[in-house]
Length: 446
Image (cartoon, rainbow, N blue to C red; front, side, top):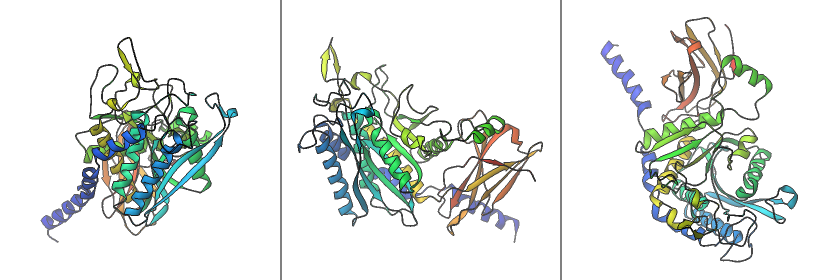
């Protein structure tokens, strides 16, 4: 074969993995700010959605809200030929479960599962929170519209279901409304334990909690920046794994951090107008969200939320005091911004659900050599095109360099000194979709 023909073929192969998937742009365009606004207004209109509020009324309280959410998921399922399995998942909490539990009650989550065609037992989850609260967390009668916290995230999950239900995916997608967040993350805990009991192979959970505010209490107005919170390493790591980190690194390379990097990369590829902000912390300082119970059981999970919070609108009774308006009301929500963050979720759900499983048993070697060696267990899937090696300087927050290496189970990066970089491996399918990057968990010597 002539050299110039070989170069053309190589370049064509490169383009096949550099191109974007046009369906992702269609998903972005399919998200509707008008539908999100309508859903937020409906949720805020239930007066209060406190977990311990009225469950009988059809117009007020947590019961009416969760029944409405379930009915919306069922409408979506009907429109996609019953493609969603919609159900309640619930657990009883009692006054012994914490000082934010005023009386015994069922914490009820609303779950809609879109089953994957090839990997139905692999799940990527997007959640919003159903419940809201007044200034006093145990006050379940005072109005607490919770327009941004967290009708915005709940509306985003419903809208993502509307858009993505029009597509077929290899892995399963779960859209869920979680309850009991304000009283102790009870809903997330219940669903995480349900997933564990039912052997769900969870790729990750995208916890959406407050995705509609663009005006911070500090006066900053920003409708493009959002935060991705992720913890550095799983709390379930073993003493052996902790010891390995001391000598081999990886203190910022746990599974949740890799999921956050995946989201960051996907957004920069398909929504370059947005500014994803990686925050190296489980959640906001000293606080928590509904991804945490999943993290506690060893699952990857992140929180996606606005960059600039307005504390006058969070956990506040609706009132005017000293000329300042307090309360989480509709006027504080920017529906165009909520649309953007819903699209951020939708394209990552799609990319992960279309993508292949990640390689297993990734190991690294190359001590006292001018090279780095990687090997891994190949994914048992005929649609796998190959694998992509990523590496970066140890002080860099994102993967900086990469190399597609074909359908092999090992590679030596000559001239790349193992001491100066961190490494990872991702699987790539024939459509160019990638798995989450896997950081080496083993070492070897030839």
